[in-house]
Image 1 (tube, rainbow, N blue to C red):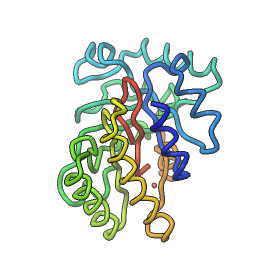
Image 2 (cartoon, rainbow, N blue to C red):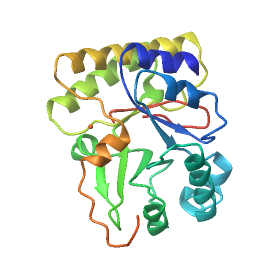
Image 3 (cartoon, rainbow, N blue to C red):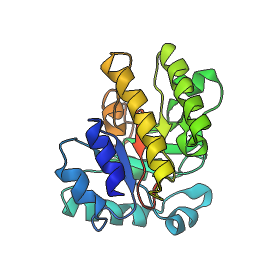
Length: 228
């Protein structure tokens, strides 16, 4: 996974990395010691996700993960979950400090592709994927998704690209990711788009909480993760 992180450093692009092991993963110190301010988000392992209906995360598991992260000096405000069903315990997420729930489920319809964020209860936000890059990582598919990014960009709004399951580290995956980052970097440097982490996007949204306490175009791949 080191080479993936190096690519984002080369293009000066901060993104959100979904990790299941918030302290033991060797990628964490690499991300924290780099020149780019990446975000580390929680992406639970498969058995934790599947233990709850709809892929929800048990309250005790969430508290355990976030307690470990806090002890290590990590502030986690984004939770990455698969599928399209919303989590059940929204109040628990908000009290734990989660601001945004991110899905690898692709939003449908033109409006949802360009504006994939919706409000949940208790001031929590949910963001779905505009595109899944892993499904289009070949040469032809990579060109197609770059064109789709440009079309979404021309209409304004947010384009959330999920870099899912690009963890093999093979040459084709790395080259496909590099071409995507080159394309995004050109558009960014031309002033046509901005690259934002999930937490940066959440910080720009209104927070209307009804319970006490409580622009990422890319989400990066990591072990036991689905990437933005």
